[in-house]
Image (cartoon, one colour):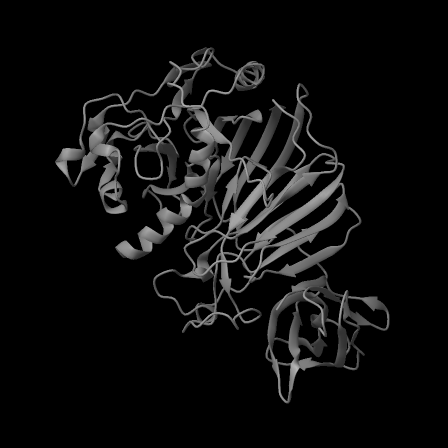
Length: 514
């Protein structure tokens, strides 16, 4: 992998960290000397008790001071400090997993506490400069610096070959891959004020507890302590890598203040351009993105598919729901020719599906689309926003399952959106041409003389010249239409494929802006 490709990945992984550092630097205090109760007897209630106790105290961010030699590292200098694989936690123990740690520096300044849990007892993972190799020997300092984050490894692709498949690094960000995949979108522990003009608060995973697995066990448990001026939280991740890498997540949140715009199970990714949105981008490739659409399965059993965009102005979309069955940022198109990028391989980026466990009640799936001039910036955010605010002094529990993989984890009998294409209309500069492909299960058994129809709808402007026709290249159906916005500056479009017996596809949704 080229240095330039690695640079893009590391800078994007820290895109929220530069903002998060503002949160961490709000109150310039020295780092506390460890967390009370972090070592010693440990069970599933330990981190919850620590989070509950912290919520009743003033927020103190972890220390960010670094020695002069490390205070202003460039990307290349940071990349030149590498963890030694032979010093990985659990290396040589004949386990399915081992753990490496990230050095502090560059975008990753806060000191993160790391603990190992063995036989019900927790102890700090000791830091030593000898855990790392240094391309520049001047960057090796003797101070007890601690760590910036955690890298989990397993033999996910090749038996006997340990490879990283999950990283916790920067604010409350983490990312993972399934077998055969490359890193793409990220998740966070919690979002607060995303899209708010007053600014977003980035919470921080300030400590991790790594449970040492038993021999032969193919899952690993990670506990994390979330902290910020507004909230503390305890997270328990049970992680199972494979063809789908699955996280079982148990979350307990303790607000310090009233939180009006909370984000549960937030997802963060990049959408630069695609065949539906390329008129402002001059690029030789057909597409460049981590995710192409937001997919939702509502409590009312509706399946929705909303292609993403890179708008000229910030767009905030909300989708009301009660007891959601799932949502995720999806990457459906999986052929190299869809992207033509030999270095970045967007066709190998994971989709990430969130499955709520239990009843999450009323709220919204929110989608934030932020303008970006390039593919370095994460500009897509989606999460569940509860209808009721989170109130100070209360305790909130959210349990969910995360599927990092190639597609949504559930089969569907419905036709699915294969592609959305948007372009100009010949001889009508005031209109936009839409082409939507439907493909999948229904077309395998419907009679050849089935009558298909689509009635697109729009919240503004008008739709004309609707055509529905077979698309033999995908053994499916294509619908085309013209959208005339008129004086409108924004319009929400929708469409569903139907037969005479009723709908047979997921519902297509789209936010149009100039």
